Amino acid sequence: MKVETGQFAVKTGDISTRLESGYLIVSNKKKCSELINSPELNDNNIVDILISLHIVLEVSLNTLYRHLIASAIKKQIDKFEIIKNIDKINFIDKTVMFIYNSKFNFGSDLEKANKFHSIIGKMRSFSEARNKLLHGHSISTISEGSQKRHSEVKKMLNPKFLNEQIIKFCSIMEGMRFYLDCLNSELTPSGKEQYKKSFLDDSFLPILRT
Image (cartoon, rainbow, N blue to C red; front, side, top):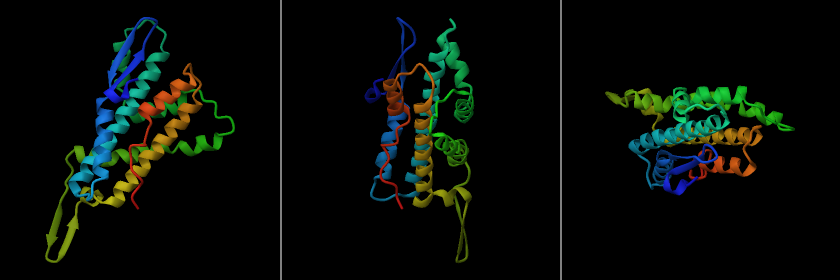
């Protein structure tokens, strides 16, 4: 998997390999990191970060599930037909099925598995900000004399809310790394590590703001 070039090379059989673009993951990680580390965060920067952070999460998880599911199907079905059907399922529903239908070996970590079950709810909560922004919800302030009132989305555009979103993002990624580690599959330990590095990494984020 050539993350640096924005491409993921996936072996799909004895003699075939599929190259998949990882540009959206790589470019939006870079964008988030640069904006969060900028000297001043304004409303526009926070809008861009919230959208880019969601793109990283959704594209990363959709790509991960594509690899996991497509590689596990042994039937002689066209790979693009499989991919097309997988892509019609949203990433949260894929996560629900992954957590509930996969075979895991939790060993003595059952308590952690119970804890990380909460990432499903965190994904839904995390996605609300992006959905409101991209669906054109009002970002506005109404001034009435000396009083100012802000729309719901306008209230989100502050470092405190951004920090909460970053915490949710990191918690989701941590939970997914745990589940992948415990997954019973044909993936080798090194294969799991590569998937975690490519799709479940949160090291591009700075130290969380307080």
